[in-house]
Length: 242
Length: 163
Image (cartoon, rainbow over all chains, first blue to last red; front, side, top):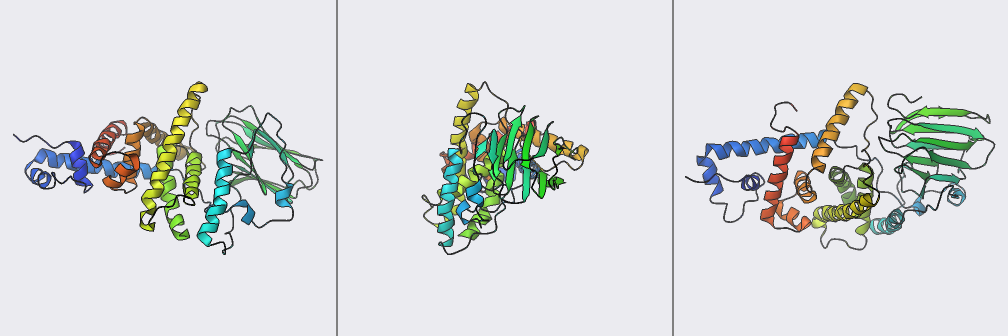
């Protein structure tokens, strides 16, 4: 009796990867062995079903194009220079890996464009961060301010408080060690995790004209301080933002 | 060249996100992979796709080693949950989240090399290309894929009519 083919061999058959010594044998065996032919079909269905499952559960690909390096971002007057970081807790610096990536991106962009092409419009939200910290203070660069939260959480809030201050101060309260606050040219990004219960407190100048809070890419709140001293709270639990 | 980068970015992101189960890590690995083109570009442009996936695979492998060390030091802090679309409808969102968690858990249960090989196959690479990417023989690739698929078939009920 001829032994049945192993799954590894059947996988190679499915993938067109038979070894030289298998090419003449395997198809002949499959033609005469119903059990192996059925096993081959089963493996094929498994691959098909697995592919469907993976595709159905993929996280969305970020919409950001290849990140243009900071120095190519059209600068509003003094925007970059105005970003001052003052860390409230401990010593937190730009992540070396991220800094390295930004640095290399400059070279890459020069390489792919020959240095002649202007940088594309930059989605400044998830763009390469300038710094991460548990708490940050910085001067906003314009009258509109965007707080972009990566996603919803088990619990937690974003509290926006307007005050007679000139700097934005943002901090994580009550969280674990997985949350980050990333300073962006037009606001900040809160990088959180789905199981987080952290609260985020953002103190902003009351002189800002508009503050937008986005959660998972959608606008959860649009605030217009107009000089008033107020406090708004945006819930980060799914479907309860408001 | 730029078109090639845009062409490969999304598939590469999906592959790394599946491999790591973490969208943030995937984004960072993809960025770093493209950044490495600057100094260590493949000899021929036709080889760009396997080159990118190989570099990303090795970045994940190296990061995995560092993470394991870190997790030991931190007392095995739970991993972050991957983030997805905002949950429009709580019921369907919960179902999707459950399914995603189930798939991720099943993938995470595989030995890293088997998971890598299986996901490279899902990304359309040949056994020869996979073997080069993970540093093994072409014949071993079939064995690893079959082993990984068998385990996932049990954990994800791939043989059932409706999963």
